[in-house]
Every structure is written in C-alpha cells, then in structure tokens.
Image (cartoon, rainbow, N blue to C red):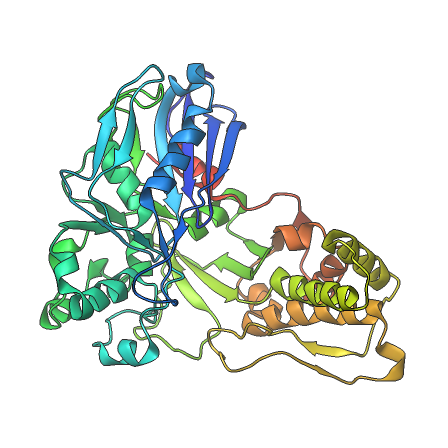
Length: 469
C-alpha cells in the first residue's frame, strides 16, 4: 500500500551499504523519480589477524563513506526527507556495545555519527569457517544451507576459537542493521526476515530463530537481533543528520538482493535477469508457496524471503561477466608476452565486434570457470574444437553462449513459462554493453526481454519505503 505523501517537496532517502561502495538516492515521493544520487567507494577492506581466508572491513571507513554521500546531497531536499530506507550486503556480521556503538557530533554541517566500540565487519566473503567446521555444527532448522560468511556461523567460530572476543559486545547484526540501530538509537538491534534468513539458523516458515538448537549448542543467543517483517518501521532518527530531521521514520534494514529485484520488477509476472560480474535469474513465486523444510545442497536454486510472505526463486550463478573478463585478461597477457601492449577495453570491444560477425558456432564452452555452489568441482571446458571454429569471433560467441546456458541449466526458461512469467527484465553491466551476450540470451530465453532498467538496491529500498503503510 502506497504511503500517503501528497506534497511534491517530500523525499525518501534510500541508502545501500555495498561490499565495496555506498550509494544513496533521493526519491521524490509523488513522482517516484530519483532526483539526486551519490556513490562513494568505501575502501574498507583490511587484513585480518585470523588468516588469509578471512575477509574483514573497517566500520569507520564504511560510516565515513555513508556520511560523505549524505552530506553531498542538497541540504534543502534533505530537510524534506520523510522516510529513510537502508539495504546492504547480507550474511555478514558486526559486533558493538548497544549503548556505546557510536558518537553523535554536531557541527556546521549538522549532526553526524562516528563508530565507537565496534568490531570489524566480517563480510559475506569470509572463509574462516571450513567445511569441516560447518559439518561439526548442529544442522539448522531452515530450508537454506549454512555457509561460511553467514553471521551465525561466524559467531559460532568466535565462540569456539576466541570466546573472549564476544565478551566485549552485547549487540550484533549486519552492517546495515548497525546503521539503522545507530540512526534510531536502538538498545537492541532489529533485523528483517531477509537478513535473518541470510545469517542461518532462522526458520522462514514460522519467522523465528532456531533458539533451542542454538542454546543447546552453546550459542550466545543474547546477540541475536529482534526480527521484524521487511518494510516495517524500525524507529525514528534520534538526531538531525545533515539536514534530515530528527524523528524521521527509518525502515528495518533489508537485503540488497531483494531491494535490487524490487527496483525493476514492475509486475509479479516479471523475471529479473542480471549479468554483471556474476549472474542471477529470479522471479517471485505465488503467494502461499512454502520452501522445502530442509535444504538440498545439490539444488541449483534457492528460495529467498521477499515481501508479504512471498518467496523469490533464485539461480545465483558464480559465472557471469567475470568469465569474459578472465578471457580478456588472458588475451592481454598473451599479447604482452608477444610484445604488444593493448588496453583491455580495446581488446574487449574488438572481441565483441568479431563475435558479431559470427552468427553461430559449433564450438562448445562449459563456462563454469569459477565453479558453482551446487557443483563446486565442475570447472570450465572447451569441446568440439575444429580448425574452422578457432577464430576470436567463434570463441567469444561460444563463451557468451556458455554463460547463458549455464544459467538456463540452473533455472530453465521452461520453468519460468510454467510459473506464469510473461517477460524478462534484462540488466547488469555485462549484459548491457555486450550485444553478443544479448543475442545468446534471446536464443535461450524465448520470453520477451526488456532492457534498460538496471537493478539498484538504493532505489529499491527507497521504493519499498514509499510502498509500505
């Protein structure tokens, strides 16, 4: 249900805390148009004392980037912000002292906050939880498999390996849960079902943590946030913030994937195909659908909680534009070894041009260069090689076809059709700028495909806040 904002001078602030950058947008309430935006790299990655597989980020650098983006927006519009939506990178965990997690400071530009007594952010990319470690944990009561980088798995790791570390904190959440908690002055963090599901040990059917399982395993359940439905209001800002008024409603933090889908799914019969570094294909299932009680590690799709009790079926491929990027990098290195220095951008554009002259090829590429979660040992291969298909155009055409066929093998076009999908919204940097990839997508996915509306989590979370009661 859309919020009743009539005056054209009212705005919603959308904020996305990404893995490498921050994006903020101002959406005008009546027209739903993005009128201002800012993006800033966080440069927050830091080395971890726990080993090479660990991935941690400096929370202070993340917050600095957030404040910089908000401060760069027009002050006269920030004063008319009536709601704030926050999304971000799922799975990760940051720890803090609930009443000492930040310092609010006033200045010429208004109030701003700085982290205080927080841990590093252990991101979704963290690899400290080995397969052996995960297998030693009691299996969760959830339809989603547990993986390294998931918040609950990371907390288990600290409980076993560095229990004294946890004694310094009494609150935990994703990085965007932390931002909402600070903006609202929450004594105990709140978390949406979307983020809770991404942590593990959360049952989306009943909307509760696996408290008994966790308690029996010695897990510090006092660190678990209170769970709310996505779209709910978590609280109000406790300070003016670069012009955003004190008392402004702030939504509970949401998952970046769900918000990116929300930004471009204009009808429930749409599917979203995004090919950037990796690739994702998703659509919303009918209301009433319930995922299987237990996870299937070999399944090529997962079921993510969306909004209003609806689930998304998601094929999240690890192989997308990164496969093409690796091939172009290989060509660049070969040319350097031959004494020719050619920029990657030139190689890429010439390679795509060459492939456009090849309408078809019998060269076959299994494009799983980076494996897939459901078949981690399946790597890439090239078959049916002949003297007639060794040109650059044939290889690029076959690579693009392989990327698309891999995604179709995970979530076939026929299933989309049988589920009532009527069109596909195509987006992502790799798909947008590669005409060959578009052609191969249109051969495999026979539904109408619409390009031009790219996924954007910051815009999506702002739209969510506009559409909720």
